[in-house]
Length: 158
Length: 446
Image 1 (cartoon, each protein chain N blue to C red):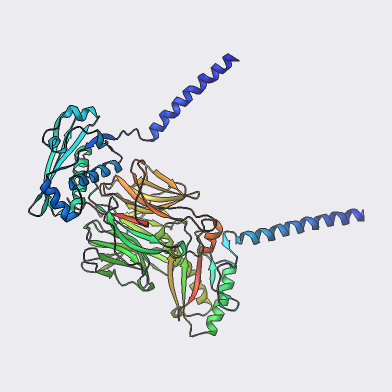
Image 2 (cartoon, rainbow over the protein chains, first blue to last red; image 1 turned 90 degrees about the vertical axis):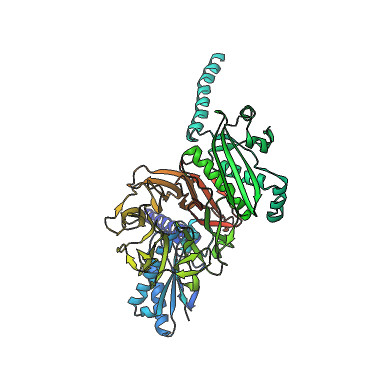
């Protein structure tokens, strides 16, 4: 009886660990979660531990949990460096019409701006620049490339 | 065994026959009209004079080639091989031997004559109905020699108008964005060319990003988006003088500009705080008017030809769709209800149709629908294409198409394409570089 129970539990653990490794490898290979890029490929740093960009889902301008965490780090860095102003550059992927993409790039940059402002960064220090789909970082025509291109990048203005 | 084989054969054969007929149906059953374009005749003295000025061996022949190519590109005509022509150009222009032209199956004959008169180019041309054996039209005009390509386009417009009963679109120009360099850092310049790709000229140097140029109905002015000093703003450009100015004084990005049908206003989007609304600016008194006020993205506005309505793109329903409203912004109604998302609506110069880009299940379509949203018809499907612009007679659309790149991001190109309203006669428009955002001018001569 006991042996059977142990075997059964062991079997369950085995299944669980198989599922976990499957998830881990999948995450690593695609670097996408729900349609949002989670990798580090094109990411640059404003300071140590402060990523310069956040990513968005297709046709979305809502910030993800990870994006909010990145922006909180940026807000902390901006508070410490009160002389620095930034430009938030909003971008879209190539799967949309040019004019609408210009507008969605502007809206993405504004999502990031609004969040920085809730952490006490003055709007005077932030300007917005939308590039629409004109400046992709990844020139591929596939879902991973597109996910890297749907972004708002915080760039030092001075 | 033998019998079984026979039965199978009987079943298979009719299917094959049906398949052939079906191809004809989807092709629109259009038989291009066989037309003979005789080289325009020219006397020795005129020939030598033009040779000196234009560096062309035989300007009469050159002009007839322009007419021939235009007619061929239209998809409605089939210009016959000149090698089969029996009559000399000068005699054909005086009195065609219709039996000879009938023999090579020509139904229409174009003849003409070029002369050098008082430093000018004088052209006369005639259009003949070969079957009826009579002249349909005769016309003569004089212009400066450097206009010789336009002469070919004007002749084509007259022929097209006589034979179809509608205005032509050949004496026109296309303004577009010339593209070079890697996809991640494209160099973009404004460029202008004749409708057939000749006389290409760059209007900007490529120092700043430029997008979406659009012709004024008066042809002298162009409105477009420039990232000059990293500030995306709508500009007005005079093609003749090269003079440029910013349109309006907006505290943010202005984009998606177009002229009103009378050329007196520019309609565009202004983006602020994550929402984009539609505005107009009167070019005479500089008064700015707000047309939409909605938390959504409202963009890509285009006036109806009578100026009473505006079609535009909005995501107020949650996704990009096409709307129509009164020109004062009142009474906005959604008109696109098919599957997928819709963008870049542009009103036909005839007023009956709105052309658009549609994205559905990973494919991009160029299509048309009536102004009330009914009768949606998709003309062409591809990996990526957008931004249709109408020929001035509302019969042809020009748009741009981009290719899919491989996993390394290689293989990218952007080209201009045209397609008939019937959804057939799709052709690539030759450009020296990659190209996007085409806008068709109205007829230069009228």
